[in-house]
Image (cartoon, rainbow, N blue to C red; front, side):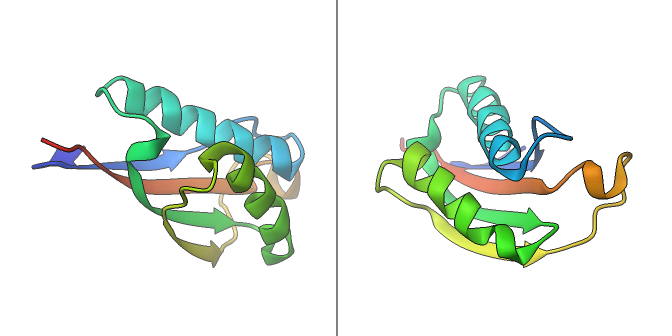
Length: 104
């Protein structure tokens, strides 16, 4: 999961099967919980790759990011993808992978 001061988290998901906004919150909660385990917070996140089933959900994702990152946004790449996940179109809509940096 980590290399020197960089920490890599993948497959952050949550609230699968719920609306997209709830899934973005769930993915960020999953990320926060995993970061806490290594003494980091969302403020430590420097880059995210957001995988979305539907690119028209980008404004929803951006709304949640504004709420959760409080103006200190990481670099972001958003990718459209079809998830091979149980539930099909009613299942997984959002996955976030991230790089966080731990200052010495």
